[in-house]
Length: 339
Image (cartoon, rainbow, N blue to C red; front, side, top):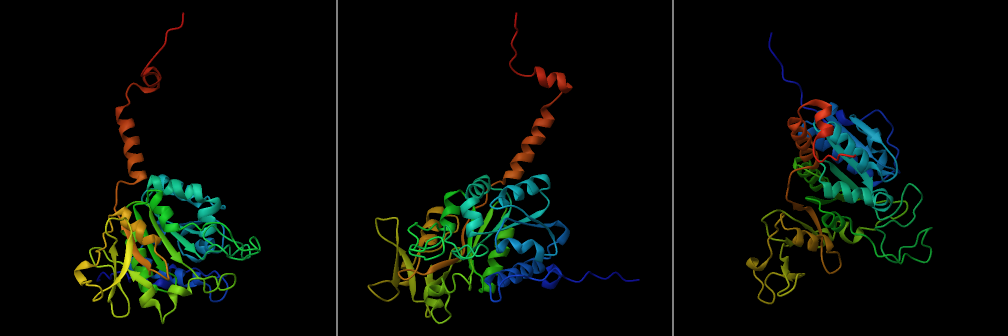
């Protein structure tokens, strides 16, 4: 009798028998396929994988993954996901949210899961609109966006999710586009390999309420000039002929777009990407067309110990230091004598 190796899982092995109920053409379909492909290529055990979501179109995600999952309440997915991870650190926990669920009612929870550095993969679908509740302006909607809740055009300054995550103390921040499968899968793999809170902003098209909002950098015919895919240690170059790049403005904490061969600019003058530099990551996350490309890939990756590691180490230390039972614990420390 010969032993046979188990077959490697396929993307379909992570799909459920549930009908996927998103609008035809929604970017969420592409993200779902990318996540299933990522888990298959990593050979992720389904019985140790958990998806946690809040409320919104993106939050239907757990129904379509053949893993464990929790469809929770509006904005509170970070709290539930934190509880799952603390209860069983061996689980691979993914949190799925949208720009409304994660940054409006859930903004405070998002801030704390990032600053605590809980070991989760956080997928934030950013379509700059509330999709499930029929197209109201969200925290990421641009000024002037006309919606049922902003009929005269939004006057709010939009929130930049990646800049928010960096400001909250995230130690991993990545970006991808829903239909950019190769880049999205690679970023998801990098996020899972990171130990700690990994935040991935995914630009996702809502063709019903905010169609083509990202067309200024997702259109195929102009993508080479409007997207910059970063790689650690490599020059920040882009363009069809790779002759464009980014430089630091002398004497300022700012970037400028230059063309190699013009004004004395050479390849050696192009800034190199340093994924451990938070200030650089923040500058890159702030860039937008038409003056600059949108930066995609891993903007920041600088791991430190995770929250659950520190918490369980503290618990173990406390248990080891205890002796004498309950009475000793009560009498430990300062005491007062009352006469």
